[in-house]
Image (cartoon, rainbow, N blue to C red; front, side, top):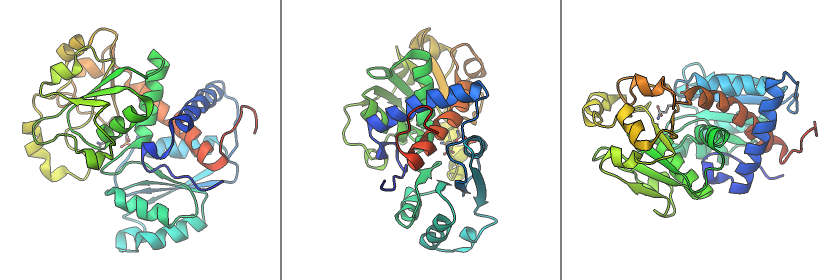
Length: 309
Ligand code: CP
Ligand code: NVA
């Protein structure tokens, strides 16, 4: 099988992503019923972090161990990556000693250069531009709670960041709509989001209108990692882009709330919403584990049938 990377959500087809969701369901059931499932015995995952993480590190490391393999953590501070070793050289070496690599870094270009020099699959664990593993978990969580996402409306409130860009890509793959509302000056950049057209998203000046009748309302921090210098300015600019109880009321009682976490209560989301009855953020976080296990299984073994291993 040719090497497949997962650098952007649309690196995989809708058919492949749906297969991963089917496998996620099965793998999650095994995990919940304490059934051992070790298809990746003797396989090694290397995780490279150039930015902080709780969920991504934990879910990949635990996930790889639960599949019978092992995981090694590298960060910029303690490796030669932080001392100027070219990313191409690092990719050659790391991919000769491991079976799969996950990277969290700054520009998308860095992960693309790594993948171009890698002998093994590379997974994007977040870049400035995209966060595809997060959206896999988010869509899986939506499906668990509400069924197929095709034709539904997702409201994105706040910064048009890496998570937003990936929602927009997912909307094209799975044929749903995204209503985006950002403060002026923070609008979607279609080229950066690598979008083919505007058929699947609509921009709204008023966040309340973006949220109206949405099946899912979602948001993220006002300042993403790597943009800390803009923190004060963003705090002022994003004041009116908080998901609060009034916004969830406009969305409707069946609307779900998601947040990739970590969250800042009182900034992008009111405590009453994230801790309220429409919030599914803990399921969403847990599902990072299950979808990424299915993703690693797919990238390493191809389409696996139940009980094959
Ligand atoms: N949502 C997410 O990626 O969380 P971490 O930054 O904790 O990995
Ligand atoms: N947009 C956020 C997501 C963190 C998981 C960031 O990039 O910091």
